[in-house]
Image (cartoon, rainbow, N blue to C red; front, side, top):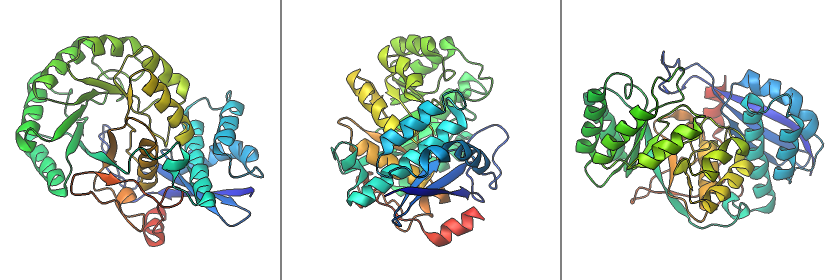
Length: 371
């Protein structure tokens, strides 16, 4: 089975607000699906958190390394692309594109072997996992409403992130957390994402330590992106003082970027995004390295249904896994597949058991959001 082409599918028209300053035009195009086609009619589906023009530009470099190759060797093919592109794209859009291709190649392998990806990635340690509803902070009354919506949907874990947390005052920060805890009660897990990857993030370790102590008073599970993404020493210092778990990693690509965070135990949780970090092949390497160092991997998932399916497969195949991220109310997650993800009564998601990613695109929805 040989690879003959790669098709790209841009998603636009319903892009969700992501908290970045200035807001989000729904027509902004951030997510691009890729479909790897073969000479036997079988295809695999992947997702890149990158615009279509950047994916197409990367494919101009990558296609000569892909087309004509045996289709059922995802790890070899993606590592060869990564190593060959070392000077032209060490991270960034090229690595994001490789990530989507890697997911698609794993999906293709699963379909060819009639096996779910969790089994091919190492075995199904679990058949379901808890998603946390991922929402943005807002002013207290509006935040309360947002939280009540997620409770009504059945989520047992909720993460709040970005504006206005950390951007107005310490008083407002605590008011937001108190509002959240009072709204959801003591039995719901709450996580906090400061959004330290925002441009010109002003806070350092002292702010992060003091904020972590406040979060601990309200039983927050973890504190995410409290510092700039590459501040390994700062995260190590924060983790030593924090009463809550410390997490980061959504903007990092390639295993080498994650290694110092893991091997020096600078964080409790790493959060690679499979649509950016290098795909399932790279995320699986990271997961085992983290496991060996007592660090938990929780995939970042501000993307598409394809990304969610990949996260479910990855976490199913790890000995220790507790959560995946689930961005709620997003058409690119909840509408573009024929059988949308549904919460179980206990607030978990079932891991798909069909071949490959175990999902099928809804052609009408894809057409609607790719025009």
